[in-house]
Amino acid sequence: MALLETVEHAVKGPIWDCRMCGQCVLHSTGMTCPMTCPKTLRNGPCGGVREDGNCEVVPTMRCVWLKAYDRKERLPLLPSWRRHFDDLRPPVDNRLKGTSSWRNLVTGRDRETPDGWPDAAPHVAEV
Amino acid sequence: MSILEERLTAGTFVVTAELPAVDGGGLDAVRRHVDPLRPWVDAVNATDNTAAHAHASNVAVAIALLRLEVEPILQVVCRDKNRLALQADIMGGALHGVENVCCLTGDDVTAGDEPETRRVFDLDSPQLVQVATGLGQGRYVSGRTIEAPPHLFVGAVENPFTHPLPGRVDRAWKKARAGARFLQLQIGYHPERLGAFMVEATRSGLAARTAILPTICLLPGARGLRFMDERVPGISVPAGTIERVETSSDPREAAYDLALQQARHALDLPGVAGLHLVTFRRDDAVARLLTDLSIPPHAERLPPNAHSPALVHP
Ligand code: SF4
Image (cartoon, rainbow over all chains, first blue to last red; front, side, top):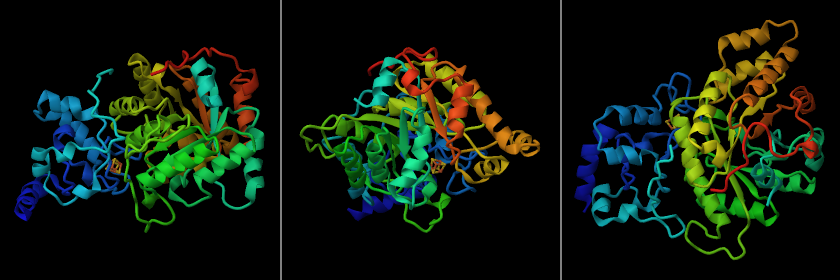
């Protein structure tokens, strides 16, 4: 089983700086890994983005979420992926850290949320 | 229902203020800050380790405000606590009657005086809004039922002044969909960005669904502006603005004028449901500012206000 994790990390590590959270959301975040945000924010940028567009925490790095916004506009993403950009992504399940998101996707494990979390509400495009 | 919720729902113009961080001095220290605000503000924020500095806790200060008969807004930030502790704080405050909850991501630990601290961010702010909303509906994240759940009025913060500028209204919408009924905006010195945000918030229906309160900051002088520009995450101050205050013959007065201008500008924008004030210990300036803006003490304010419609239930 560890083989899958090794392969996934070998592929996603160099391209997306994958942190192996085990619940990949790259498709809905403009192919930008939110776990590389120093605050690990999964629902958009914090209010601390610098005037030059760099990160509050790491001043030499462009804000991860700014990259995500740019890429969402630029990359040839599936329309459904683009639509999911503004979805409320649930809190990270910390038990999945280090496991393969590929397997979790196939088994549906990455979409399991605690009972008190509302079911993935269909995204209402009010805006 | 909290006073804040009642007034915003009725369309009454509200004024909220941030309590300066409390350390020593006991309840008297809190009283000293709130007494000058009392006639003017509808509710006061009990902050949660602002700027990543340790202070008396948000819940303790919110309870102190209740004891002083001032309505608290419990600020809750994601930086220092995991989801169990955040839920416990909201429920703990609610046990004493704290209904207003304002959810923030929080400045990073590197902005504070103990930058070696472990940062938590187990939840982000839209998730925290959703969690707080769930508590008010009678369930913890786990799904465990809360018998006789507290009535909560949940809000959040958004920063219309920083990048990605077009994404800020989307993010505010995300918080509104998660249950935020009010938004206190970040301090900012680019009036045109606030204008664009409010126009879009109004056009998209956001301002009718969640009450938006721009923040006005009363600084003692140019040093404060420079500090904000250089040290406070997400705040940039145009050089010309700092210079204008700095080179004035009376910088203290010039800083006051800047705040007054900002407030006038905000009040002219569509969808503004009230103002949030950050006083940096110029508590006495609140009475002057609101008088200059012709905003009466809260007891004399009547619905509906000229600026924003009554808040629509989601
Ligand atoms: S500035 Fe961007 S990358 Fe940095 S902590 Fe905030 S959201 Fe994350």
